Image (cartoon, rainbow, N blue to C red; front, side):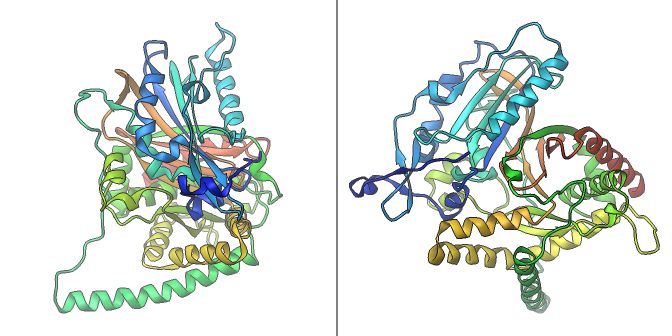
Length: 472
């Protein structure tokens, strides 16, 4: 699973862009990758010119998409420009024709899992486009991108992918996205001064507590073995099942408004409650075990997506490109209180309180500074091992992204569904959430032979019904 980095002579270094520290962490085997899946309304055939679509867009988006990762004599990694060949990056697998939809479901599940685990070749830029022309129960045709995480995080990569597409209803108009809701601040005056002082003091307290607990957990403690975590070495090398489910965005918004929380709080509460129901039904008492989820937060100070052109060519927004995210550790609420009472809404409220407190904390940035110090003084391998341990010691990971409000199309072929999954991270269980049009797509990545994906999906759907009813 190793991505072998080509050694670079000193005369070639000046032609290259340095790989960011986070990009270097992700280059340590196994190389973490993101797969973004696009489900088409119609069968995918030769009417869609993927070569023209991709080759006209990708080369101008960012030099990293036409570069390979190389290493100089001192061990520093760089991006080196190479010639881009479409045949190296656009892959059309062939399987027997005329099979049932269920058979193609199984074939696609195995194909996407195998593709996610397959290492990139060091002699080619670190991305691929796979065209699956066979019908599944989700779509008549499916296309997915596989991208190395060193190229950028979900925010950057989604901007690249969407730059290849257009609005289905009006190709001349740009795709639009939901706005990030920034926290309101009081007007200037005494109230504002008191508010700011209070926020700073609370932030200092939160930072000390969060950073201390993070170091303790990452260094000395790890979650116990449960139905969602076996804790063995090498979990990142194991194949996974990818299972999806869809929720109405309007219905989730109604729950959000009733509980006066955020959309992310609601969906995280649903996932955590469903996870606890699965754990308890699999192993008694595990519903109250000490389990932690790593929740990824975008650390950019923005109120929405920026176009690729803005991020790359506007001096004020160039800094938005790349990997800019942080982990916060969220204790998964226990299923029952000490008196064995059960309240499904506590899963939403506890997540809301934890995330709100962590947003008023500098622990994420201190952890980033610690990683950079480790990289600078002890090497990239040591820093990467620390980052690996942060993920391995937790029971699961949770991340979310916002997709377009309007329906997308590629070469005038409408796209009905969109979701993402992360591969090669040291967790048996990870969840991604993606909004698209008026839907929320929740995707479960579960280690094969360890977690029953259909049973877990059923428990999460049950949790949604419980929280929805309780919110009334």
